[in-house]
Length: 558
Image (cartoon, rainbow, N blue to C red; front, top):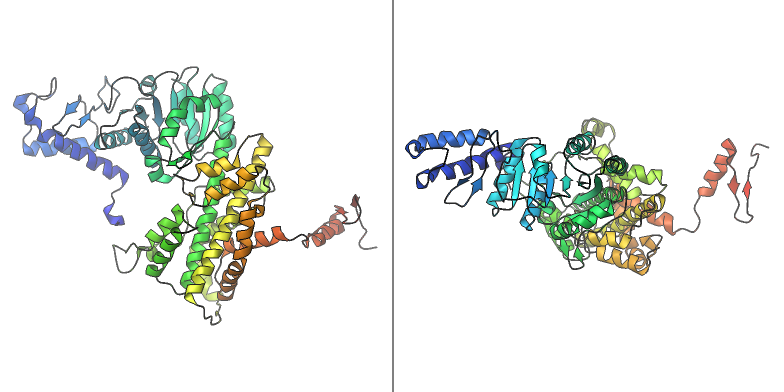
């Protein structure tokens, strides 16, 4: 793929409208447009180009036009707020917010045979969605530029999905919807929203007779279009009403659709937040594996692609490992070498990883793999500082001779073991949040719905589900019989990889944090006794003894 060959979304919409307009005017001689262009005014080639240019720039008044290509479209005038005529009659569901995720989810719903109405505050996005719906098989999708007309077009009781930016834009969209919705209608927020905001909005909406569901949607653009993992929580009646649609549009795996009712309140958004936290850890661990293989082992991008392809055919099979192999194969279209080597080493983020770490701290759940991955993103953002610091903080790595084949195998084992720790931390956080909020979340079911559609989908999620099926009260994945055996058998490789990184001055924060988590969890006695003595010394916080019950304080200076 060539980055320079991909036009911005706004330009793509203009191009699509221009193509459609040219197709329509090219066949103008084959039909007359009732109440529109008279036969004597049929467009000549020059006028056709001008008309196409005008249509590409902005919507123009008109009626449904049918060309020999079988494309139909309604462009809004003052009397008609519909921007496209994909079907007649009322829709089964509505969707507000037509950025990448919203547009693709709307097309997914329509492609499964459910008529859908869509709306966006920018009419150009509505029209772009309509053009795609027509181009992808005249899907049953109608677009509206007016919120009132949009709401009227949906069958009562109405279900409206929102996919807008979290925070204030969600509140603004809800306020606008509430002007038109009626008692018994429902709002489904599909954004990456903070779970307490979802619970606040649910109370506010239900006080006005409007039902509310917060639904995590994972899978990115591809997942939204072809089948995401869905994590709905909130009003169970809304889920029951939407269940048929959600099961059809979600990813399909051997154990069923990748959707389930997560629980009441903000449970769905919470699980999606933790999913994203695990995703942060997963991505950082893969990046560290790449760094060790490249820096210690000297692997080329071609070799790295082969290694990750091989890993993806085994126990590390996952979406992230698969796309990593693909990334190493892409040449730079604007110069020599590979694109991955030309990308600036500054990582972006949207906040869900930070939320996960904040919640882990709030609930006193250790999540060092996830937390260190967040810290790594913070440090990557200090690009200018790092460049300035490099000459002042030199390190001459000692000569290290390693067997490349053995290194690849060691890194594979270390990556797998570290991933187990990352997922264990995420599952522990969900479990503690469920206890604190009285959410009846089934951890095995969460692993099941992550098997397809989502970013962290991986082969070993089957095994995580099986672990919780064997023991729903499992305190940690680390003590499940199968996973415990694997961690023990892989720890020698794990320790070698972290040791190589330390010797060579390579930061592997999440891999080393995972190993420290494992080592801490497996030790029957820790040096925390000294910390407790220090706390009692300076603050009289007391301590417990190993041999006698009760709380004790000592005058350490006596």
